[in-house]
Length: 402
Image (cartoon, rainbow, N blue to C red):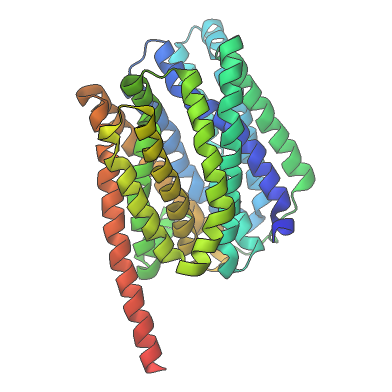
């Protein structure tokens, strides 16, 4: 299986290497121009709104014309968007615009151009059998984590030496390399379907009317609201609570990613095979609840590391388990559409959650920065427990009838 996935694993690693140089830096970049923490949340929300609209549509396009072309479109948009961030002050001066206007436009370009995470997941689903999808998705997440090991580190080094522009431009160069590798190395995973119909909003919403799939998607939304709330506020939390600057934050992201590589590459597949995707995701949610509950007690590095370890375990087990459950609930012909709809829930969460969590931090201080994430993780855990009991009962009934 690894041999079959090798090209997409390599492309994913380089993609995330550049992405992870950018994301930890954005909050500091925005506040560098005198903007508030709330504006940071709005910037994350703007990008997520664009992906909310575009990801399911691009997912359906990939079901009809193939995954590779959609990945290429997404990578072109990311290259342009990241390069614009690198020269945002220059563009602003040349056009007489506010720097933040250019920054927001750059994120809109990247958001509208596609949702390469969901397309990558659909690509992987095309290549492996349903029983192997948890392990395959775990390997993809391991590449995400591996990129996160080096990206923040290199971003921190480049920032310390050259300032903001060079790390953003370096990320754009890496994204352009990803584009070239996709064109040259990545085979198409499915044939073009000439008779397939385009998708509309009604078709996407129809996924929520299918009982089995809808339960998982609603739980996915609760999980995403918790995760994206924390993603949006994490760097600012470190700054306010522990006095960390960009360099310390980047190094911490890299250390966190090392553990994520081990979790996704070596543990997720084994846990899924032993416990099943549903139980694995519930175990992960218990870990997430523990992590977010500990945020209020973070005053020193050791306590922070404990909460981050719990978060890493929880995110790896939960995300992979839920993604596998969603993928296995969809037919082979609709993987792109359904996983795109799933990705749109991440985007919706990225719109709603970061302004809430950054607003809590700005208003009440860092101790309450994780409250929103804790609430939604607890809701998702309750939903997972109920679903597990229902699935167990259905399985026992089926066995009795047989």
